[in-house]
Image 1 (cartoon, protein in one colour):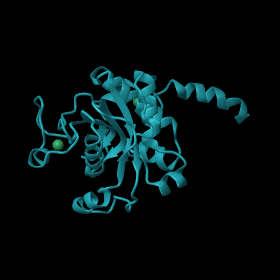
Image 2 (tube, rainbow, N blue to C red; image 1 turned 90 degrees about the vertical axis):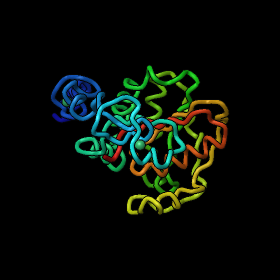
Image 3 (cartoon, rainbow, N blue to C red; image 1 turned 45 degrees about the horizontal axis):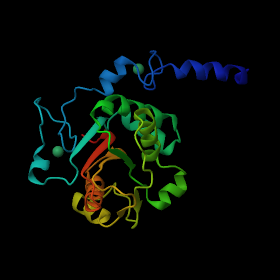
Length: 231
Ligand SMILES: [Zn+2]
Ligand SMILES: [Zn+2]
C-alpha cells in the first residue's frame, strides 16, 4: 500500500512549500518566504549582518572598523528556526532536496544582480568531512544556482590545502588563525567576479580568508552568497 501511495505523496509534496509542507508554492510559499526569507531585511552590505535601521548602502560597525577582503555578501535568511534546522537536515540528514530549495531561492533573488563575468565557487569542505558526508552542501547549492542562472560553476576553484579543526567552538581570533593558509585558488580568476557560495556564515573568518586568496589570484571582485547568516 505504501509503495502505491509514495509516488502520489511525492508529487503532492513537490508542489508544496519546503518549509510548511502545506501551502502550495515551490520552493517555498509566499507566507514562508516573507516570514523566513524576507527580501526586505536590512543587512550590512558587506557582511550581511542583520541591522536594525533601514537605509541604503549601510555597513555595520565591525566592517567599518576592519574592512573584510570580500566586497559584498548576500544572505537569504538568518541562521534561526526554521532555516537552521533545514541547513542541519541538508548537512547531517542528507536531505539533498533542500540544496535545490536554497539554490533556487538564491538564484531567484540574485539573478539580476550578478554580472555576466561571474564565476561561482563553492567553499570546499575539510577532506575528512567530505569523506564522512559524501557530499559538499555548498557545492550542491552552487550547482543549482549555476544551472538556474546559466553561470559557470567552478566547483574546484578553491581547494583546502591545510586542515584546521572545526570552527564551531573557537573564538574569532582563533577562527582566523585556524583558516589562515587553509585555501588555495585552483582556477584562473584573473579579472573575474567570483561569487563564493556557502551554507552558513558565522564570523565570516572563512569567507574573509577565501576572499584574500581569490584576490591574490587576481579576482576583480569577490561576493559571498550564503543561505543563512548568524544574527
Ligand atoms: Zn510555507
Ligand atoms: Zn558588516
